Length: 623
Image (cartoon, rainbow, N blue to C red):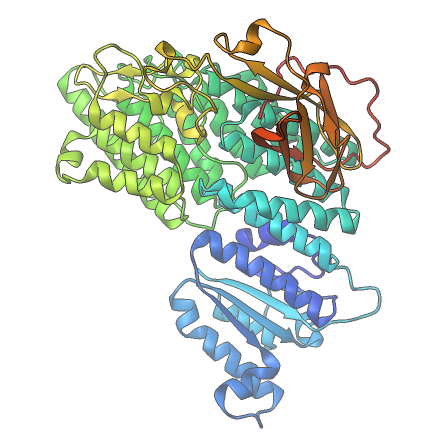
């Protein structure tokens, strides 16, 4: 247990609560304090899958139907309630309205008969979380964030939880609202974290170039505000981007780990250690048994169940695939990174961790023992993913467990449908495609299925391997992202019947890093196919009309593609902006084509930001 007087930061409050299971908040008006407590309780409860119960000391008499109770009797009623079901069954309990003298009278870790001491005693052996709100309103003690800033941090935390669960679909709207809240509050640090989470979300969705751009921006902003832990997280995420092409960057991950350790961020160091270990796990001679065990110990120290689960997952995967007997042999597949950044665990520990060492011998007996050990690790990972409510990790663990343990798979004739259902629940069509591949087996021509080819880089798919039994050795990096199909990717057979008789609209963003209130140039071209009449003749004087569908201006309103139509897009807020372009034939008044583009705008730098003579992007972004 611990005592925290005046919490200034939601993230710090979460860390304190998750580490000690008790948080005491004072020094703010009732509305601010209650909103802060609710935000902490909601985020922790959502992540851990626990119910939330709320008490106000002044309402305890009314709750029991005895409004005439004295404050002392009301306090006793609260403590007794907390000694009951809330202690037996894990949950999050918020007790607000604790008198200032009750909080101030209790030094750290002691008890003197006050209400706070009684609550500490009631929760001493509990697996529940206790948040206490003190009514202390002494002058100068009101140090909680303003409503906008508090909401911004709560929104960021909710977005991070969605990403940790492997369900980033809902993170985008939360991040846009968080950016606005932090800008209103003038919180540069909060803005930096919002940009970082944008980048992380893009990495999860497989948008590598966009993720790289945002993470570079986030890293620079973290440096500008002296947020070294954030800089370390950004470095780690940038290093993880390399795994998508099948070429991990262990040196960059090692540097991120050193940064975390330098600032005392034990959770960040544990995740960076895990990513580094996974990136090297398939190297011949690498002592992966020892490293996975060390990482597991790190996560236990900070009570991070999700980190422990991903450690067990990759330890089991390496053990199941290795051809060696001492934790050193090479493996098929590609090195990647499992897990998601920065989840705050909830205090559980796994009882199925592997042990360091070099046990086992070659031959059938050693193989059987390795398989049984891998099964135990998969089962431990699966249990922790379920406790942490991480369907992404649960689905991948179910899939790998089924592939590596035939007996487990054949016990359930619907194994593939069950795993596919979990992937479907978080909108992970890429995960469903891997299940389809596992069920169908290798294709006769050796080509990857369309649903995988349209989502992953060829370099990653080239690392896909197969066992002698026809089971896929799925690249580790495949579980790092949930990529969407690439627009325009040809379906099977399309290469032989390209539409060469049509004309298409191509949009190119010429200026990198769009920011609010700074014009960005967009070029529009009409590109005729080889069989189109315009391919051998000049384009007619078509008109391209531009319309903004959000908080932005676009100028001029019309352009002529034949003359090189170029528009200036000026957004007025960060987030996602939609633009509509309509190509018309002015001679006949006919609308030939209408396209819409979506452009992500990042928050502007704290200082003046006016780009000078921006060069065209080498890799143009197209609608």
